[in-house]
Image (cartoon, rainbow, N blue to C red; front, side, top):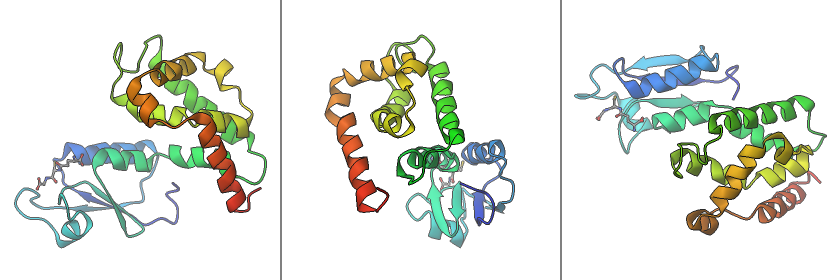
Length: 196
Ligand SMILES: N[C@@H](CCC(=O)N[C@@H](CS)C(=O)NCC(=O)O)C(=O)O
């Protein structure tokens, strides 16, 4: 997400630790040109904009991006992060993928692998929150590899071993799609949208 030419509004409450998460993410991304609208007494009364933008929970934070609301602090943090855009770029381009995009992707993988370290799972010895968040992306690695021609197996052996370990779990086997099926889907979409 580029901060330029974007209309960003954050519904804020000064004491909210959840809003602080979002502000931190914005800071880290160097996004400063957003408008902060402060709720006065969030526990007692709420602005009509908050009621309109988060009609289900009526809670801050809400990030309003070009008029569209994103609710839930952790989802907003994810939204602010450029990562999903980077991934999509890896398999939807007509032209050859730029070296910079490959480098960004590889740096990201290495950073994730660094977090894993020598542990079997991200949280230690048991499959948990972070593994759930990442394993669905692991099944896209094959597709990314095909389009980027990066050798993820050699670049990030521990991460690949983690992926294989997770794929042995019944829950993962049941839910996470097969990597070849995903690659075929990517090829189909490229054809459908005239990329190939
Ligand atoms: N799960 C939400 C929690 C947000 C939350 O609890 N916000 C509080 C302020 S700290 C709020 O808006 N409370 C208003 C209310 O409960 O009516 C998130 O992570 O965004």
